[in-house]
Image (cartoon, rainbow, N blue to C red; front, side):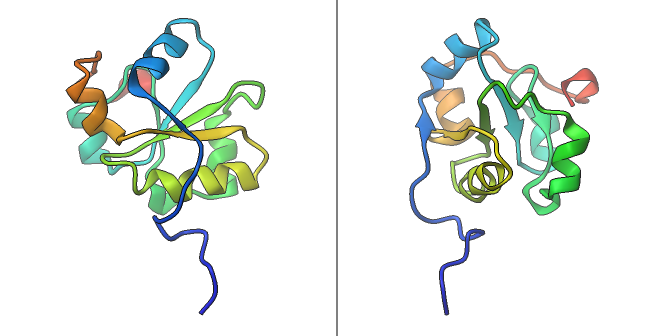
Length: 122
C-alpha cells in the first residue's frame, strides 16, 4: 500500500498560536476550520471559515472563495485532521499551513474564541 495524502501523519508547515493571533490582527492570513459543525459551533477562532475535513473538495473550496493571495491556516482540535487539509489546499494552489497543536493549543494560550452559531464566521 502506497502513501495516502489523507493520512493524518507526517509533517506540514505550521504556525504557533501566538503567531497566528498576530497575523490575524493584521489580516495577513485566513483560517479554515476543518472540525465538525458541533466542534466549530462550541468554540472557534473568530472569523474562521468552516468546512469539515470530510467535505473538503475542490468544489467546496471554490465555494468558500478563499483569497489565494493570503496564506490559509487549517485548524482542527489537535493538529491531526488539519494535516490532510493542508496537503489538499496545497494541491489546489493555496499557500497553506496548520495551527501547531490545534485548538487545544489555542485554548491553552488563552486566545480569543467565538461561541454559538457560526453566522458570518462561515
